[in-house]
Image 1 (tube, rainbow, N blue to C red):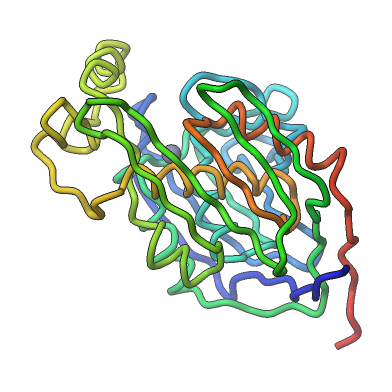
Image 2: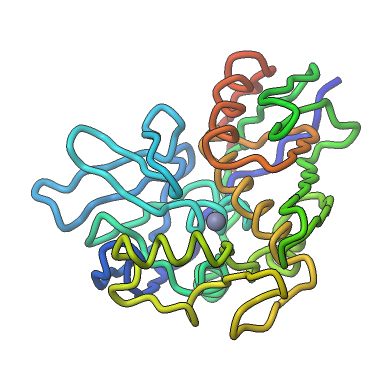
Length: 291
Ligand SMILES: [Zn+2]
């Protein structure tokens, strides 16, 4: 069974998002630029001479706690997950992401600002068919406590179900399943923020995360619920975990067609699944189409 391939897409004009990095506290400018068919998503460190291009592919991912880091040679880009989620969620396949620092802006911990900027830039449908990675078998990784599973899908879609389980804390248990497309990403996922427990937040702030970020910038929970903050969705945590997974799956470099279910999974396990899918899934190449 084959699935119809959609056309590749890029943005019609550049889009800029300014902010500062949570970890470094440094100002950073992100400029999304249109790119030709077949380019993929490529970060460009434009502050380095010569500029260094870092394709957003799992082979360039290095394991660092609590954030997604891509590296090529000695150049890296950090905290890329919410930018990748925005691009993948909006099905923007070809884009150069120019940055003038190693750490991308944290903003409000969601993908909302990036999606708004990309929407304002506009979308161009390109004369090329998007490559696919089709899940043909059930693949499961992790342990009883924390796992991720991929299954074939009946439709030409990526569907994600995520279960968050923080026991009796203010986060509690949340489950959500969604088909992933630009409409659902924009409406149901893009505004969902990074979250953490009070103990984690205290530890991170002590590590220097709070150079400029404060508790008000972060969605922090104690046993009673969010501290000095209002939820954007009742199940905002499950939504953010799906957003993260969309960003992690972008490191496949093509569309994933399948059903992904995850229980308390994180960036590392998600990236392990990407590697397995690239080995075991069925690849359908991208193709140029005559206009
Ligand atoms: Zn995240």
